[in-house]
Image 1 (cartoon, rainbow, N blue to C red):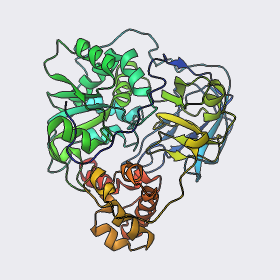
Image 2 (image 1 turned 60 degrees about the vertical axis):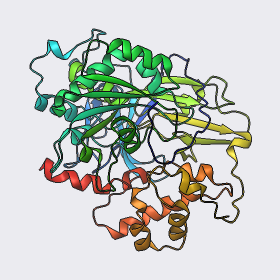
Image 3 (image 1 turned 90 degrees about the vertical axis):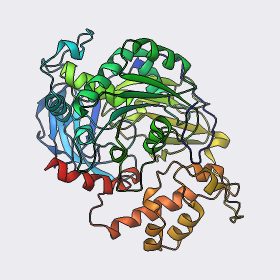
Image 4 (image 1 turned 30 degrees about the vertical axis):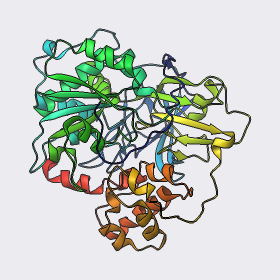
Length: 466
């Protein structure tokens, strides 16, 4: 069974919602749309207070070369444009809409008819990329890179294949798994569209070995397409990291930043993004809803939702029976990379795959103890770094030394912190250290830690987009 070659750990999967069919979340009474739901420049509002909108109405246009438009997921009236706290606790400019009914833009094809590329000869690579850009499709597996950027030819690189990431190695979250089992045909057409847009003749879908039904279904659906290979991958963390996925599938190592997977011939796209590409290109449907898992051992009814972007997460948690009567930690994401929230008044955005509610003893951290120099953090680091050293340098604010030790290569997977027998918050220190990298480079943008880790990627792509 294939896997990446450096480091890795085996956390308990806890896929409590794997067999729970996706349900459509109820419409919110009020929807909130942060203007920074992607890497790059925030979107710019094109609506004002009092404007009426429908489902699929453009409410904010792309704010720069690397940016993405935002569309309303609800019908109603714009209440205000104001700052609202996001998952990091920072106040971000947002558009707030009072929901009234559910009226859709007539241009959106709401039928269940499957459209294939063979039926649409008009879809040239440029046309596909333009529709993806128009629809505001961004990476839905974490970082939020506008998808059209990944498909734009970079200087000194040549794409050879598209790899769909269906690994979902983060514990608890099953949104991508449910998507693959419920909408396999659309995901495969999405891959076909991405391959044509990238001008490649080879596609792969990497799926974790702990998802045998998804593997079997995808193999059955792709059996007649010899360009596509379904690749079962060892259930190892962080197998879903882009560089780790490329290593496992192609046996190629991606160099340190600013290098990206395209430098070794691969364009990596999340399966949820591929589905969004299908809907954007074939159904003229902008990205305004996504699959989200809400799970936790003490949750009454953990579930998978198809939810409109802008819906407050409080509504999803209430639909699962509410928070357990216990000490709770609500994580934006999974337990390995998730960010702890201090409020439930945060809206669902394009990049949110799941919420994890940790309760009782799970919600408490152990008291950190002195480092015992065991080097377990080094053994498990999938990037071949020395986490104990990077954490120490970050604590001492030795930013230039940390940069020389390749702190920007850290993918923030949390494997080091998971393996540390002294319970040292290594990832927390490293994230803080990477925040300091902003002062060393004028090219870095604000946003969450994942976005900061991609500053080199953004500016490596700019020449190809001008």
